Length: 115
Image (cartoon, rainbow, N blue to C red):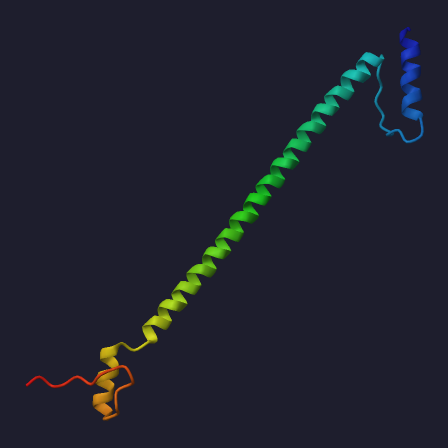
């Protein structure tokens, strides 16, 4: 097979239905195969880059979810702390009862003055 046959074969391949229409001129099939191999490597590199970007995006999403969950937990904890601060202590309830003359709540005993 000589170079003319190879060029003719290449033209036939590029003109066949469904073939990509890109304009490359090759002197021989050897050049064509070399070019397609280089293009294949570029395609693989682009695919790897896309996969890496997707992986990074997924990691960012997971980190964001963890961050959001952490914020929710911290918010819940601070809410609980605030609620805990709003609950009067036993001593506060006794003092309040003594000041107003109210009976202490059930379960709490009125402090007896020291004699």
